[in-house]
Length: 188
Image (cartoon, rainbow, N blue to C red; front, side):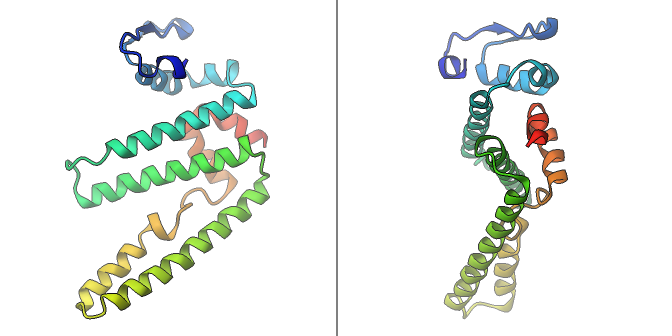
């Protein structure tokens, strides 16, 4: 449905799931409504095949990319932007976790190892980059150097899987953000 109607200017539908009377003129708004308000129905009746699960994950990933491209407005302060970016990054990491489990059928123990290894690799690269930036800018004030350190120690960089380190945390976050998939993830 999304491939055909996602950009259709004449799109119009009534939700109709479990008698819901809501009407929509935009496919993405309709899809968000269905995923948020009717997740139990979807979980129980739809998304049975691996291809449907993979399609859902790809749509979520595509939606995240569109949202991050559209979130570059100047209405937010720096700290708001950092929080929004952290939330977006966490959602991206959760999609990575879901894709590893559902699409690539990676076991939880293998996923735990991947998360640890990826986090370590990112931290090593970040430290290297931070140290070289400080060397290049070496003539700056101590305050500037401390600011550089704080930027590189931001959780978005230093802890890419923050809040997703364990199976429990993954399931809690996935249930909150993508509710209808939690039962699929729990099976793996």
